[in-house]
Image (cartoon, rainbow, N blue to C red; front, top):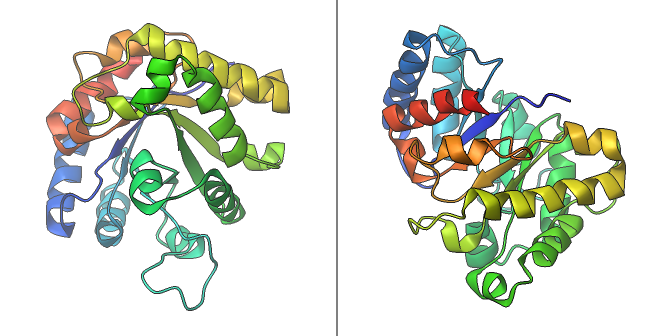
Length: 260
């Protein structure tokens, strides 16, 4: 089964709404000028909540070849949860993707697999696609238990989801030790874990579902290494951090995704 590669840029807490407009316009123009076909590689930006409406307006008005999304979502539908943003609110803004369980959310906010699981369900119910992040810290990698650790985390994050709910999930493997450090897992490292993730999904949901599920790699992805990463059979794209803030660099990453 052919899986359309996805290059998702996670801006993290960067760029105000005016900077977001300029960045998206420049990124889209580069892709348009290069005659990029979104059917071959999908490009998306995951922006701060304060940028979403501005990005929506420019993408819709100019029919830009970009998807956009958020970096988190509340576990709750509504109510007295100050500062939280619900899946329904994001759906009203035309969001396609929402990252959940990013390692920074897990580390700095103590998010658990069970909380990620709840968020995935809320997003699926709202018709939105989760990008479910899993990956091991350095000590687990050194201990040699990184595959088991990551698969167990994914199992908890997807617990009791139906096949229909899983159809609204993209998985992102992000070894924590390679995020924002300049270190990158070798393509073989990434393939080892992502291959195991696909095998686990096949065991839980069947071969057809596993074959249809996109699994991304995240961790210091750049234009200089993305083609080699994308050459691996089970890697369907990248969750790109700092490099996605540079529209020229991110456009190169998207375009080079065609070599998969």
